[in-house]
Every structure is written in structure tokens, then in C-alpha cells.
Length: 636
Image (cartoon, rainbow, N blue to C red; front, side, top):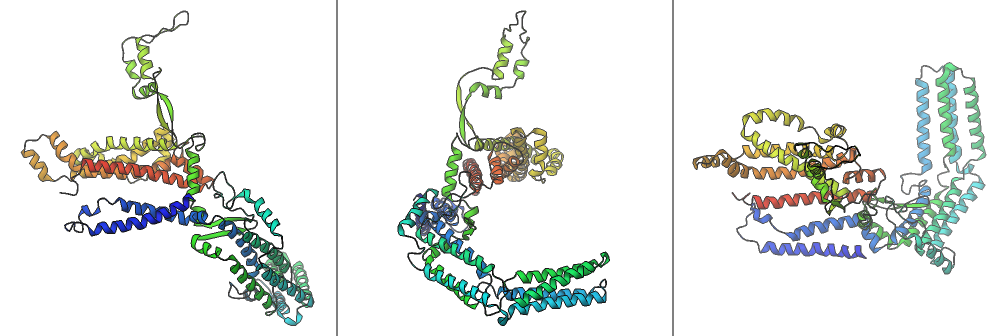
């Protein structure tokens, strides 16, 4: 019900916001000409249109709309799939979906193969003339067995009767299938069978999730499904009965046995040096056996059977009724298919998890008692403030104080002094009070990106400004930066992680390397792009070098620097996921890597969504900073 409500909500939101946007355009100022940045400002309604459209497409192509409005359709299509699977082997023999009879195709293929063997025999220099004549004679005999199978007069009466019986069974099934009381069970028995199978549901979550291993329950849940399943069972029996049938009349059987015996005797007399002749004889025998096992009949023998299969196919299509339209309209890029006793989603609904399943999975992973690999996605833990103090303050503060650390006395007692108390303070070895600290996979990834980005900004921006203003700095640092900047972050990842370990330090340093080069290039471009007229004006007003840097160069470099931060943020996220793929036990990339191994598509899409949202939060924050710090941009 929630999915159905959201479907209508998104649809009407798109229509309503488009109409509202068109209404606003008509009231636009006359002086807001094309190219004016004011025309691109605002427009929350367009954000709603884009978001609603994206979610509506997701609901549609993940088949969540079908699941919401027609929850029994998947189970019914499963039973239809069983019928189609049973029909497929029979249709395969006739020009229904193919261009010609399977018999015709087999005869054409094997005749060509036999002709190729004759050419190969004639061209071979390692086969003597006597063996050539013998092999060509065997090929001709094999060719002559085909008319023995396609001759209507040679078809045995027993085979004719069996084919008639099979045709009659298919025709009876077509008649029974259209009856409302098919299969032949009482209504009470049907209801009991349907009720007994309700525990399994009609449409489970995809098999990629941990909790569910069945996509589509194979047991029919409706009377229509029960009808199609019963028909599929009968069709399987008919199909098995037909494919056990062989058109092996007496003349063909004798001719085939003669060929087999002749080839066997011929190969037994060949020596080791006549391997090619033996191989050619073996190829002839293989073709003879393929013809033997193929369902080759006279051309008009199976016409009635083809007609009966086509009639049943029309009947089953008619019995599907509105289910066909549900399949066409609400199951884009695929359908429910049957493979043996089980059914599965085939198409976009398989690899694109349903929003309802994804939200449920996300809620489970958010539960701190479940999480992912016993670690929550995002939660908190109580930490003593002393640990934070110990992390911030360096230990050498205690080392530089005068005096010595306490030494134990004769009784083995240690009495603390001022120096040891200071050491306890700077190392956090004391208790104060506890505060909540974020923890979990999301927090670990967020913190790594934040620390790497901040470190890159703190070092990269001053160095970039210095390179943009000083020829020595540019000449000295430029080769170093340009040497490692073009190298992909993934190339550095194995080395950095091997040296600094798989813990946070290695990942943060790798992100620092990524953001550093971007920030240096951005700051250098901003500094070197400052207009000389502004610098000359500041000089003429008596400004010092520091004042020119602070009030002229740095403000003019801010657009480049802030744009560099936006670019660096995206690069850091991409690099972080790759680093957590390579090595790590926490983080969003680690979660996706584990989910990939077990084909947990819902989890993979959850990680993609998380990374997108975190990246969006970073980007929106930077955009707000840009609006506050350089509101004059684009208005000069």
C-alpha cells in the first residue's frame, strides 16, 4: 500500500510541479535575458520533479509497482513460465518461432557435413586411393539413410498410432484447459491447496538478500496459477512421450547397423600410420549417430501435431487474460521465467532491487544490534572525554618537564609525582565524563574523507598560492607535483597501504595525496590569474605584501580554490571506496565489497545511495560556503 501511495504521489508531484514551473516562467522579469545567472536560480519545484522522476523510474523498472498493485502476478507468471518452458521443446521442432522444421534443419546441416568430409577425403594426400573409395562409399551410405527416415511409405504403423495418440492428448488438453473447472478437482480441494501454500507468500524479496532465498514461490497461489501448473505437468509428460519416439523403421535400422559394423571393421584393420583415415571414419560414424538420435520424420507426418500445439498456445494465451497486459506494461525489460521447478526474475527487476526491499534491508542494517558484520552502519558509543584529551595532546609535554618519573621503592610501591600526573593527563589515563561519539561504517568513511580533504586543503592551498607567486617555489615543487598527480590513486593504494597499514592512517594519507594535488593546482591557478590592475591599485594605495595577499590575491583565488574543493571531494570518495575494497574491515567500500561477493544487490545499492548522499552533503555544504564567501562571483 505504501508503494502504491508513493507511486501516485510521485506522479502527481511531477505533473503539479511542471505546471507550477510553467506558470512561474510566464511571470519572469523581462530584463532576465538568456544567459543571465538569475534565470538559473531557485526552483525547488524542479528539484522535486527530478527527484520524483528518478524514484518513479526506480519503482517501475525494479517492478515494485507491479509488486504493489498486482502482488499475485509474479506467482501466476511463474506458472505461465512453466507452460512456456514445456511448450518450448515441442515448438522447437516446428516452424513456429523458427524458419523451418527441425528435421529439415538437421538434414541440411548433416548433409553439408557429409559433403565436407567427401571434399576432405579427396584433398587428403595422406589417404591412399583404396581408403578414399572406402570412406566415400561410407559417406554415401550414411547419406542414403536419410531418405529412409523421410519416406512416408516407410513410416511404421506403430509410429503413426503413437503420433496420433500424442496429437489427441494435446487436443484434449486444449479443450480441458479452457474449462473453468480445470484441473479436475473439486473446488474445496483447490482452496485447500491454495491455502496450504500461503505461508510461502506470493512474491518474496530477491534471492540476493540474506533473509530470503526464494524470489518467486513456485507453488501456485491462485486458481489461474493452479490451472497453468496442471497444464505444464501434462505437457511435460506429453513432451517426454514424444521425444522417446524414434522413426526407426526396419530398413533404416538394418542400414544403420550395417554402417556401424562396416566402420568398426574398417577402423580395426587400420594401422597406427593410418590415423587420418581412422579419424575420418570416426567423423562419419558421429554424423550417423546424430542422425539416429534426431527426431526426423516424413515432411507431412507432424502437421497435425504442429496444428494442435499452435491451438493450445492460442488457448493458453487467451486464458492469461489481463495477466498478459500486466506482464507487458509493468514488467519492463524482462519477465518471470521458469527453470525446472523454480522461478526467478529475469531482467531489470533482478539486478535493480525493489525500493521496498531495499528500505527494509537498510532498516535492518541501521539496527545497532544487527548492522553489517556486527558493526552498525551509523550509531554512537559513549567515550570518556579523557580519551579525546589524550588523542589531542602530545606525550612529549610531560617529557620536557623538569624532574624524573617516579621509581618504585623497596616495598614495590610507586608514588606518583607531578611529572607522572601530567603524563597521565596528556595520555588520557584518567576518568572525567563520557560523551556520545559517532561510530559505524558510515562514520568511518566520512571521517577518512574529511581528514584527508582537510589535510590536503591545509597544506595544498598555501603551497599553491606560494607556487603562483614565487618563481623558485613554482620551479622547485612543480616537477614533484606533476610527477605524481597523473598517476591514478589506485596505483598508489597498494604501496601506501603496505607501508602505512590497512588501518585509518594509510587510507587518510592516500586521500590526502589525492586532494593535495588538486588543491595545489586550484590555488596556483587562482593566484596566477589575479588581475594586475587590482594588484597595482593596491600598491598605489600603499598596501603591504601581506595586505595584497590577504585582501586581493586570496579573495580572487577563492573561486578556484572552492571549485577545487568540490572536485577533490568527489575524487576522495571514489578513492576511498577503492581503498576500502583493497583493504579494510569497516567503511562503506568494505560493505559493498562483501555484498559483491555474495551478490547482495540490495546492499550494493544501499552503499551507492549512502556514498551519493554523503557526497551530496559535502557538495551542498561547499556550495553554501561559496554563496557566503564569494557572493560577488559572476556579477563582475
